[in-house]
Image 1 (cartoon, rainbow, N blue to C red):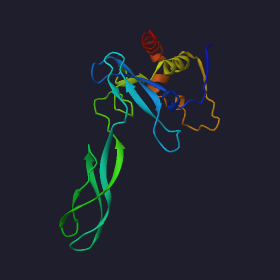
Image 2 (tube, rainbow, N blue to C red):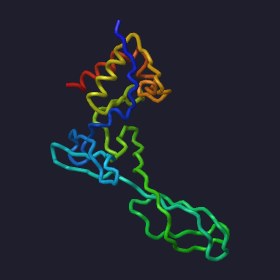
Image 3 (cartoon, helix red, strand yellow):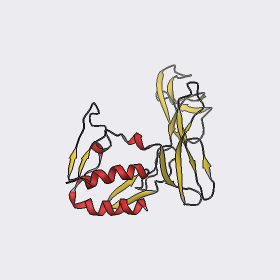
Image 4 (tube, rainbow, N blue to C red):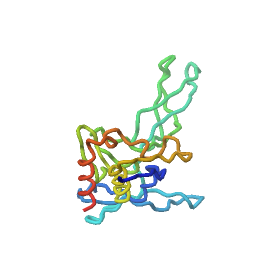
Length: 201
């Protein structure tokens, strides 16, 4: 009987290396943790590099939103505003007072957000919005992993006849506790293991 004991790994434990499809040549590329220029010297980010076409992405893909509170220049009423998403930082933003419909241009507050994932049903990594290399559709569900370490950990879990949780202060936050049902059910075991075996090749 194969036994799996949860090591309390979070999905973030597999962020050190993420295999993705290169947006230029569609070959297998990799995201790796790199230090980020900051005051503390401890921050990291994920940089992409394709070994086939040498395309690189160093900075995460961000979008921007104007937001804040404003007093109308006409009726002097206070109101909140929030814009649609911009690709570039909006230096000037035109707002319309909801009380008197007066329009004016202001210098807005700006929040930075990561680029939204495309609604194509496929899984993308959160830094540069690149498609994961290891993903496959199974009966309407997407089975995916980040890297080889992720493959090995999932393989041990799926193979196991006895799966033991180790709730050592992790609550319901470990990767295993949040796996979708189609990965946990016995009827999909053989199919999932075949996919993982192919990904290891």
